[in-house]
Length: 141
Image (cartoon, rainbow, N blue to C red; front, side, top):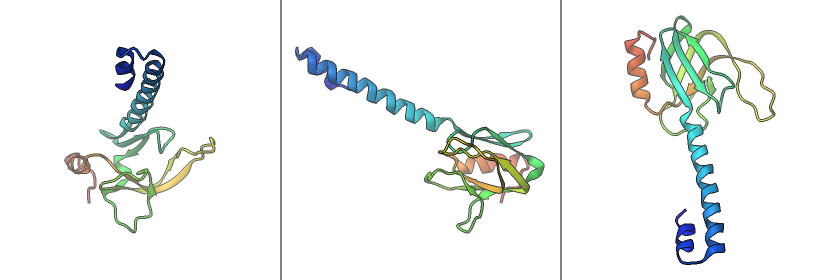
């Protein structure tokens, strides 16, 4: 990113322009990749919990409060659908009383509905999410 302007300042026009263009392309790619990660949310709404994760699901999914049976740390034996995308940190297990239909993203381009009884997600601040869910009288455990 800094090599291109430095070379241009030292009268190396061709190599300076090459490095400048390559640096800007690399910068745009990195910013786009990081922005994709910022668009993954778990939102507590009055009706329940919404998972907005375009990397795992084709559309945001609402889990209604009366359908939730547990929102809490995931155990290693959990059978819930893993939507953590390999994220580090504490994974939360969101369990439902009945099967819930979600539309996971697929690499083939054809999305198919999947019925799940629970899912795993990895919020950046799981402690804050669990504390707020408890305040809203959701089944935290």
